[in-house]
Length: 84
Image (tube, rainbow, N blue to C red; front, side, top):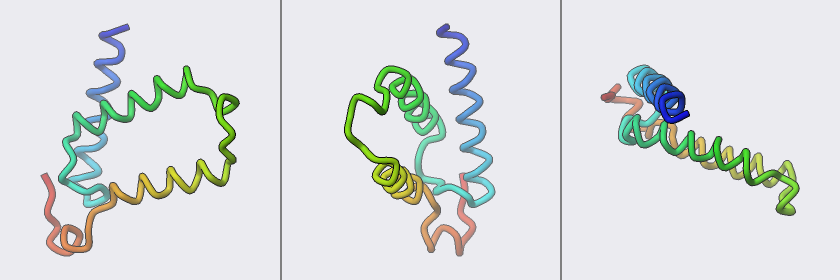
């Protein structure tokens, strides 16, 4: 299981690197750290199901939209084309 999760982490980190190089994601977050965060969310969502908390679909969508928007490149980064 550890090897499988490690492979998924490497795969996600590479996707982050590609997106950063293409200017689709802010280049400042570590690809490894972002991959780790994504895996934590995925693993946690298997344990913490929606029926445990009174959160509407609209509330959840608004939160995820805000979080993902925070990973977008800044205007300065987008203009200079700065990437890792």
